[in-house]
Length: 613
Image (spheres, rainbow, N blue to C red):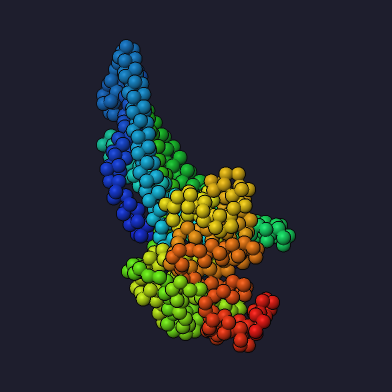
């Protein structure tokens, strides 16, 4: 299948996922939802704060039970300030209050969590939609040269990666700040309760954080190549399915399947290496956190036995220790997942910021479609010029044909007229306006194009016909469909113009798809028509019908006909013959037929040479 060209501004594998441009792009969109972010943050801090109250309630409940046995320890024992003798009735009351408190804390905390999640998801969906639309709109406005080196499936996948906005927004609004606050608050609470136990709790924190950071750095590597692999896989699938007929006729099903297997195995190998790295570091972190808990419980138990601490204090510290490592684990996991999310987003933002959109310009003046090429040169690359000093004129209301062998530069000439590419030098004029100063939208609104490979979009047949003029009525759409030779298709299709024609015109024959392109152009009524092999897939009778419909257009447009068949050029008012990017013949067809050039040879080969030649 086709090679997948890559768009890289440097070595992507060396780029950091924490790119300022990504955050700037998100911030520019997030500014519009400032109030919603405040609400999300408020709910996040509320459920975080409520969660920190639970260990204090645990201590109260356990000490209440332990208080029943307080008379069994020396009265002057240190560390018993939170432990007082209680009757069974007092203990039961304290336990009931504690249970009720824990219940309401859990329910209210979860309610705040749900609210934060809902509003966060809503904001994320809005931001995601905006970024997708921005990126898609930017790509559509890039010059055609940008797409010459891009795989369409790869571009689509990069636009799809805008869906990573949601996890990033969730992380920033509901995790990073609340978890950081949780971490600081837990350390502060523990220090105010008992500094010795606090030191025991955090003694293994530095190596734990070091491991977490090292894991994040290791997992950061190779993210870009991994995503590039999946772009290649998507492009390969799209190419194979798009050319499925060629694949079948070539007996290449197994070969294409094997290619995909090799690509996917390579991608999954990278993925599994990341999993192994993550598990290796996670095992060390789990060992450290459990060692810390064991040391805390052992030291706390020893203090209880020496009557220097209450059982409730030990349980409280154990609960806070769980909550201490939880935000660290969360922030570490967040760093790893954010790397993946932000790397995906960076690729989407890179695409959004890539290239320069087609330049704007002045609107074209009203006119009749007079075109003039003045010494136009063009090359797809500076080293390879394909048009050399083209000079030609299209008279208003007349038919001008571009003839010549394949690769002579005929379609490239038409692309320059449509401002799909810019000339290297020289100028093109449309009704006296230099195209270099005219806006692309204005130029293309004035020109209708029918190409041999015209696209059929998903949707109804009517919507496809009026794609350039969606406001056209159904009656007008039906009229031009008949004029373009779609009458039999309308009779055959179950719902006529309202039939869903599907991707690439599924349900339409090749000739019917060609007629659809012609109908799309007829309904637009432009001042200038470009027919690039417009009837290549039509039979002779239908070609005559189409030519008749074109001749009946009012006002009569200027026509530029590009064809390899003499039948499409013999009625032209003027013919230019291109060869290797230069005009080698020009004149009315009758004059060219009297010579011994390429056009006369084409006419003789067609068997339609007039008797006087």
